[in-house]
Image (cartoon, rainbow, N blue to C red):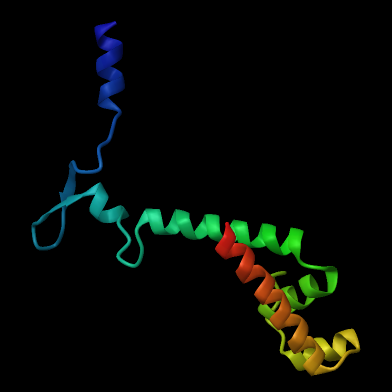
Length: 116
């Protein structure tokens, strides 16, 4: 029993334990290597939840035409984002109508995101 628990503890790694030294002979920890100076992990997780929530709202709240225009306009379907003019030509409607639909859809999404 004692050997098993020691073996288990021997495999554990802690973020603040030294794992080596850098070129200036300073101690380096795993946490320093894993840290991201741009954003911390909480911000990353929060952003991912917000993106997931936005995609759900796009899917559930927007009408088909609004959804199509938003997906094309911002490249949400994996393609390169398209201009209002390109979308208008694809859908056989005017550019100004695409603009109105886009503005209305963004307004709907913004309202829903504020409420949730």
